[in-house]
Length: 284
Image 1 (cartoon, rainbow, N blue to C red):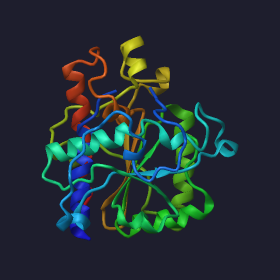
Image 2 (image 1 turned 135 degrees about the vertical axis):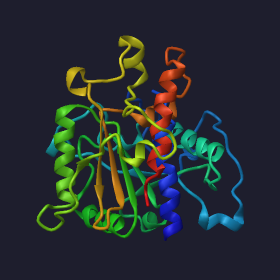
Image 3 (image 1 turned 90 degrees about the vertical axis):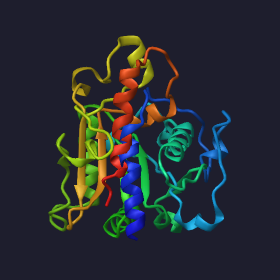
Image 4 (image 1 turned 30 degrees about the vertical axis):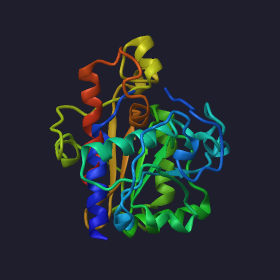
């Protein structure tokens, strides 16, 4: 399992490092098993060496249903929320991993439910827009076991105080403090290796949705309460990073829409790329 953890470490670094810049429902709801099935853009593809089929990194997106009864309605239907920035976010990120690293990378990505038996086949999971609830009661023990057994989970693209409070409640459901006192959400300081393992970042990157950047020229959403970007984490009992939380930033939109507008300057693109690579290097 160690090789899988090292791969996830590398991916996390590249994940933070490669990012370009609202929330965008790219496709309608469907029972997709791969990102490739939903792609109409002709995103790059490449062959996977069959000899390394079981040693291949796959970007796995979690299909979930938000909980508007508990946390209020959002801008997207609860069953569609997991599709934000899909499928190009997944495909473009996989392509950059294929380009920038020596990893064997699956070009198609996967969509997985927490109740799927195949969940454990993917050491890296991605959840987009978790600020309106993520877990059904029956999914909590599955995800808890997955993480404590070596899996890694990335949360991305939620903004402001209300969504943070809802998310924090979800994490308390996942790791109740009485049973799991060490699994607390903690801030990752700028000195943490996640910001320096591949690229030496001077600040914590913040990525807005393109409409926000183009219209207002700022890197945040939700006015004042979205100004400060947060990277938080949960570690296991041995200090392994198993959950990273990217709040007040939208890395996935950057993967999806790299170079879409000239208003995103070269320096802005570079700032967004750096966290992408760094996340993946610290998942051991």
